[in-house]
Image (cartoon, rainbow, N blue to C red):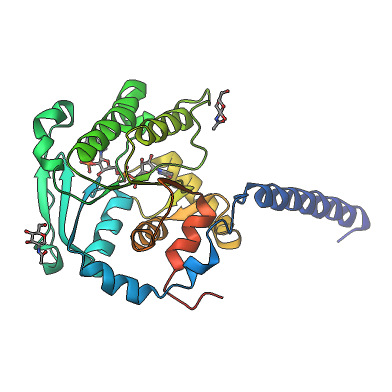
Length: 282
Ligand SMILES: NC(=O)c1ccc[n+]([C@@H]2O[C@H](COP(=O)([O-])OP(=O)(O)OC[C@H]3O[C@@H](n4cnc5c(N)ncnc54)[C@H](OP(=O)(O)O)[C@@H]3O)[C@@H](O)[C@H]2O)c1
Ligand SMILES: *[C@@H]1O[C@H](CO)[C@@H](O)[C@H](O)[C@H]1NC(C)=O
Ligand SMILES: *[C@@H]1O[C@H](CO)[C@@H](O)[C@H](O)[C@H]1NC(C)=O
């Protein structure tokens, strides 16, 4: 290697280091500010006792979007946990399951365009989980709002009217009703509209880019996810969230007592919640 070439390499290495360092700084900024917002005494509660106690309450739940990436993992968590004595899926199509553990799962097939006609499907559930959603690429602007705002809000209204006391919404990092961008704005608006329904308990989860092996081809998301893998490894809660982490967080949170009507979980909180009961928390 010549001296000149060596210098070239040096400056390339230097620029690369500067780039990596800036990225690291940006990522640290991106880490959610409210981390550790969960009271520690909640962390140390014995999750196993809470689980056993919860089972005796004979609660019923429903899931919207159980065929989706988060929804199917959530359903599996809920079914294996046996926390609920009745589990109902509300969706636009009937799902088939190989595993016997799903045999008691009830399915209500509804037309989301005529949801009022299906009000009975939403009656009698204590807890509701919503993992419904589409993308602008798939459904267009109108279609996206129709699903992520109208369907979600209408479902929440019917659930509230049907006696649901705890509604769980999978929203998204960056949700902001004041945003000028369609996605964060729609997510922020639907979060706020559901808050207006006044559930006894309303839990909002704002995960980052969902990490999963998506069946459906979404090339841009696929590429982004590949690029995000090393970042997800180094900074697990900066930009990404594995769907299993969201599912575990939702299920664990149900067990915890909550003295607020509304609780908002950022990515870091979701990560904490998902780990409760797994290992001893300090
Ligand atoms: N992708 C991300 O990186 C990301 C990040 C943060 C938050 N989120 C949000 O998290 C939520 C769940 O995301 P996901 O990726 O797990 O979901 P997903 O895999 O896209 O699944 C979406 C679910 O919604 C249902 N759905 C979609 N369009 C529908 C329609 N027109 N009518 C009735 N049902 C419809 C789907 O049912 P079918 O199976 O019948 O289509 C499916 O059950 C969404 O609200 C999403 O915006 C996503
Ligand atoms: C449990 O709830 C179901 C309705 O979901 C009800 O039919 C049943 O009687 C309840 N059982 C007990 C033991 O409370
Ligand atoms: C949105 O704007 C309103 C009114 O300006 C403000 O009170 C609120 O804090 C903003 N919310 C967010 C999430 O930025």
